[in-house]
Image (cartoon, rainbow over all chains, first blue to last red; front, side):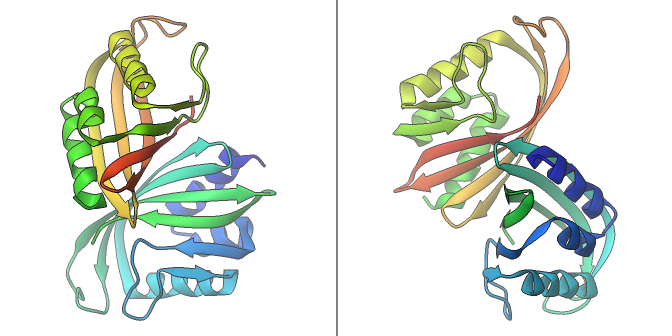
Amino acid sequence: MDTKQIGEKLVGFCSKGKNLDAIDALYDKNIVSIEAMAGPDMPAEMKGIDKIKGKNQWWNENNQVHSSKIEGPFPNKDRFAVKFHYEITPKAGPGKGKRISMDEVGIYTVKDGKIVKEEFFYSM
Amino acid sequence: MDTKQIGEKLVGFCSKGKNLDAIDALYDKNIVSIEAMAGPDMPAEMKGIDKIKGKNQWWNENNQVHSSKIEGPFPNKDRFAVKFHYEITPKAGPGKGKRISMDEVGIYTVKDGKIVKEEFFYSM
């Protein structure tokens, strides 16, 4: 699969809320994940497929997703961009119970047919 | 200005179609611009503020813009992302006279208060 095809698969999974399946199918075991900012219990940069799965599970368990709109992939050589829009209500933390919109851009780097880096761009 | 403030200025200019003003106000003179692909008369990578202005002038002169929607900025440390949607009709080239939608993501890198790199993600 080339970069665009991997991006299309990722967008397909994420559009169905199947982020964990996307990780299993498309991510390298040494994936590096970079958030725009660290959370209270989470560093901005994490490495390794198990930690990234853990982060995704945490997100799934701690947010009620009302709707999502996922645009892309937008490729450039060995990378592709995806635009995410979510309407969510957090189940925990300072925003608990308060419905919000979330907009972010992800940049994914592909090497040897696997996603080796994901970088998320957003402000809170 | 920090990265987010520079991003807000860029989005403000681009939302008004003032791309050339954005370049004058915000770009470093050694700006590097990287397209997803080369054009018939344009390399994928160009360097220097005069060349980037020339590319933008070419785009302005060769496309009729019917509408645009510009989302962002979405920051991550020294970079920010912007999502562009344009409805255009090219005035020249193989797509001349045919109205199309254009979606792309730009990633901008900031150093010492100026944009030093722009990278565009899209497929044709």
